[in-house]
Each structure stands twice: as structure tokens, then as C-alpha cells.
Amino acid sequence: MGEGERPPAAGRRRPARERVLAAAARRFYADGITATGIDTITAEAGVAKMSLYNNFSSKADLVLSYLDARHQEWLTRYRSRLEGGDDPRDGVLAVFDTYIDSAEAVREDAFRGCGLLNAAAELPVGDEGRTRVRRHKEEVERLIAAHVDALLPGRPDAARDTAEHLAFLLEGAMVRAGLEGDSRRLRHARVLAARLLERC
Image (tube, rainbow, N blue to C red; front, side, top):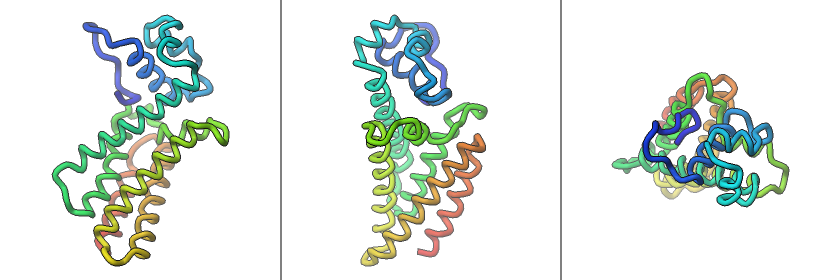
């Protein structure tokens, strides 16, 4: 479930772990990790504090689970975008589209940029959460690089420079989109990326 999405309507309730993680995702994204207390999460999830601690050993453990869930959610969206395409240019643009999809899954007035980067900004140097965010970003860069390598076979230097350029374009656009609260910068970055790929 994305940050701006509402919990399911009445009916069969999800397990406590899922409800806690969904509530934490909403609150961590909207208010920040530091500002979000355990009481806020349990109240929103509709569970007792003991239910939280039966599923997560600590708030830090809950934060790591949140980061892992965001990473998996992003990969699922990316793989869905990639289905049926074998053009390397389309592969690169699928990465941009996945970021746009993530931005547009949040209510318009609630978009705050990349939830992983927001979390990393709150965590101290050396924290495992920052390591997981870095790994996610490195994986996104590897995905871009693999598509660019396929586009520029036998030209490893050009491929590496182009992939890095695209990754910086994407991340810069995501930061600005977060500050401005909508996906316009990401959409423009996608246009710029497509123009760059046409020259390859």
C-alpha cells in the first residue's frame, strides 16, 4: 500500500503485522521517523502496543522493515512497467516511470519526495537503515546501467557516463519534485532522459 492510500474498508482484517507496517509507512512518510511515536502507530493501526512488539523487536526494527517494504514495492512497480518491453531505451524510461508512479500514488497534497531518502536524512551515519537506502539507490543505478550497456554494446566508458548522467537526472528531479509536492519535475526529467537516449 502506498503512503497516500487508505486502509481497506471494513471486512476481513489484515494481520496485526501488516496493519502496523502500513500505519508506520503512512506516518513515517507524512510526519517523519523521529516525529512518529509508537503510540501514534499503534493507534492508527488499531492494535495494542504489545502487538507491535510481538512483530517488531523495536522501533528501529520497524523502520528497517518499512525501508525493505518500500524497496520491494518499488521493484514490483518497476517489473510491472518493464513487462513486455525489450528495447533498452524503454527499460531506462521504465525506471523514470516507476518514480512517477510512486509520486502519483500519493495524494497530491501529501507528496514529500522519495520516502527512502527522507528516512536516510533522519538516520545517523552508520545506521543500518542508511545502508539499506544506499543499496536501493545502487540497485536503481545498476538497472539503468544494464539498460544503457545493452544500448551501447562495446562502449563501456560511454555507457557508464550515460548511466551516471541519467541516475543524477532522476535523483535531482525526485528531490525537486518532493520539494514542490508533485510529479512535474519527474515528468520533465523523463522527457530529458528520452532525448538523451535518442542520441545514443
